[in-house]
Length: 237
Image (tube, rainbow, N blue to C red; front, side):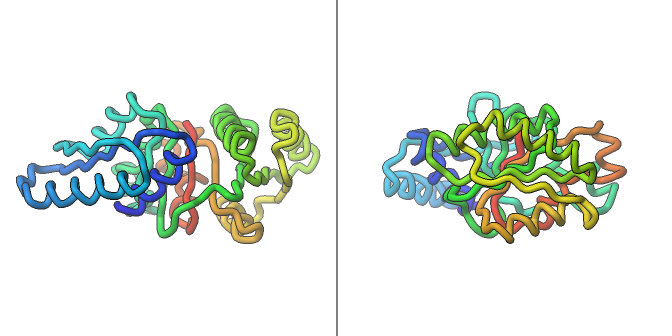
């Protein structure tokens, strides 16, 4: 989970924000020395970065505890250790899916590397949740002068151009590039391949659009991206 802390520090340095760490154990551990060590390393890293924050330890359901604590924070940053499975039964019980479903805050998941937000790939389809991602992408690109590419995946070219046009109108001069792709190879594969092609170091997209049961049965583009991604992903609810 330390890579999540490093990603949170990058964001906090940009925003002048506090970093609030959370360690959740499903069962009481009682290892005082371990908790003391984690707290010490956490605080030392914040001191090195010149940031304020704190670290809390909690017992209970990991997903539920994270969602409850999210109510008083602006962004959740998580290490992506267990992306949603391809198996239907596993998806139904996935803690990551529960967090993505229940959280009222954007979620930044980190897998093997952190992002400095140098080049954001915004996946945009015009849906309400994609618009949440659009608003946050516009904020980062405009405030911090980050490169922003808009990707729309749509087999109907005319509709696709209209969706991209909507995003570009909102972004004004903050959109550096826009791409319209067909989804013949699957939406998640197209997103990951495009991120690699343009050297994006962050993917930003909307959250689940269907009901929990339908998402579990048919799968989701969000799930596919989280399984395949090598760069951090912000999912906006």
